[in-house]
Image (tube, rainbow, N blue to C red; front, side, top):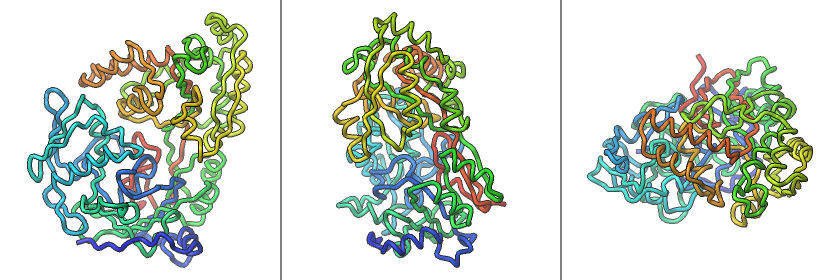
Length: 508
């Protein structure tokens, strides 16, 4: 049985820094071969799976298993669930579970635990809770069989069960906030309390009696850095084995450094999400011609060259190449054409342009990017003002107060198109004013219920419509680099900026 001790969240800062720089506390020659030291700039607020999301997922994968495993290429494989199938209505998902898995205290993992986890995740209000919003109930047939009853078909349900919603914790630990720093799951590692400094470094030790395939490393550390220069220095000196490098200047450093191995991935795109497509805040944005004008006004090629060193691909669509919704020619649907932009503004009744204010978060919109966007829009008559927001109040101003007609965002281009539909198209966080039309509703309904090629065709129709109606102003897909110190092989994860924890192995 696994044994756990509670983490000391108040480990001295000096010790935390030393741990972060030395991986497993060795002599300075780098981590031992049996230790994997990962560097990240993503800080998980908690290790409670109800709050899991995004690039913090590897922290959770160490100590929790998911119902379904997502392979590097995006396909699904058994994990805690051994098989699954839908009924004819696509609203009942029957799942068969393993019968040989125990939680840390010896409690069997079973159907009741699945129900408790999924319903808690749905109701807890975490950042990904909306992914289970359509879960009506979980029927426990017996210890090894459950049926998920859905209000409507959800084409991304298996994706979500391989992601945050699928992480299984011991229901006995649900009371209070114990899971935040004392995870209780069935995963391949357990949190090492003595070597963990919450907020700085999380250390995991391999579980002796893990039910599944033995992981390749005895220990894993995931350390949080506040800048990529420090991460790259750690890679160069062997104190860090693996990291994601996003900034162009640091990518140039690692690509010129002997011994470092880089694997590129095009995943996130940068661009403007136009919330106010009905013109409630800025009347001009209610006109499709105006939104098209904005797209024609942006010089994407120059932005990509100047801001990203040419490392990426321009795009006009929110769906990435791995998605069935992707249409290659839509990447260049809007040519840079300021004259055409001015013509469209005049056709819409705005020959002298209009004024617009957007929020600016420094971590997303650099000075150079903000200047470039404003210059391009001003050249066609659109007077753009930036409101500089700090991260403490940005989310409430944008999403709660709904104070702006749009914003510049980095968005992942998931391989599963329904994930993008839910996050960006359906009313919700990034369609905060609930924009829709007949074509959107019709194609979304077909994507939801149609199998195979028919669903893919509907997704492409939706994509074409969104581009032609200019709901968004994407700039380019960014090239990220997965970097190894040469001792680790890294497989990028389809649809995610960071690899799953399962995607690391000792280099041969």
